[in-house]
Image (cartoon, rainbow, N blue to C red; front, side):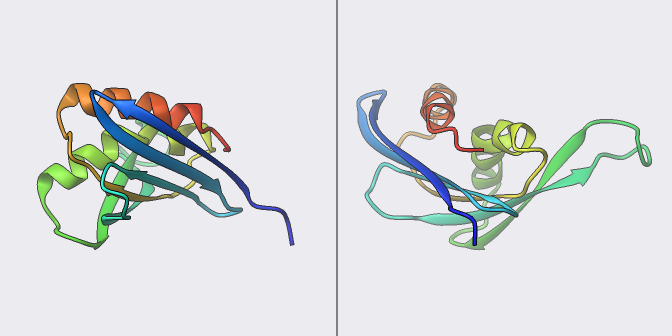
Length: 121
């Protein structure tokens, strides 16, 4: 069995203490981003071909809430946070656990950089 790569980082994102853990498995990447000290909403994001047929268009991520409230803002935050993770990991699915106080665009962008600093993919 192969070793599982994992990296964690604690940072202050726009004045809010934030913990991020990234773990790479053979078939997916797990990203935990919390500002509450708990896992919060669980979202599964997997690559799906954009309209236009095979080989045309970019790969988009289809998101599905597994645990927590299924609201449009959850999908927007999730896709903005981890689209680059899936792309850089060779279009692997991403399981994102997020519990965020700051859901502003600036907060999401800053958190995305913390996630990038935990790169294990």
